[in-house]
Amino acid sequence: MAGLENSMDLAAEAKKTKKPAVDRTERERQRAFLEQLRSGKTKKVKASKASRPHKTKARSKKGKKMTRAKEDETYYCEVCGCEVTCIAGSESPLICCDEEMCVIA
Image 1: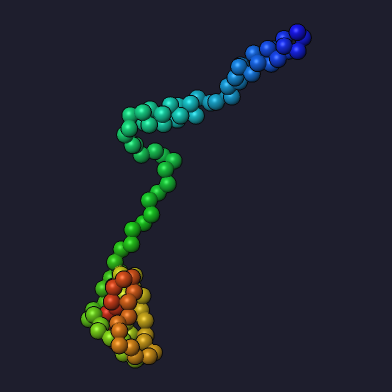
Image 2: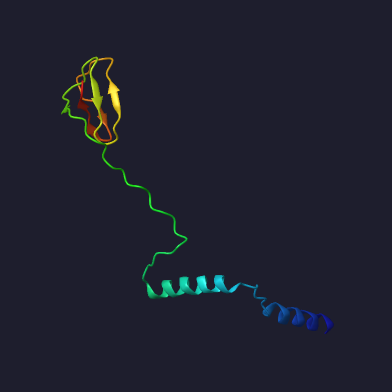
């Protein structure tokens, strides 16, 4: 019966769980997190990352929407501000940021 007693002692020791030492601020953070989960409401937390900056429209350079690309004309995107000089003509307009570019020269 010596083997059975030994396994019983091991089982009793396994039931004892050691709790790691956690500082007070970490416990408070965990408590607040669990409370938020239980309430179902979301709150802003200091540790959350900043939101991605939204794309803003560039200042408009006066120009008109193009119908087709012509050689040696300069085109401007009203969304991102990109400028393009066309080196070869085309039957279709230049597209940038899902919008037609404007003719400025």
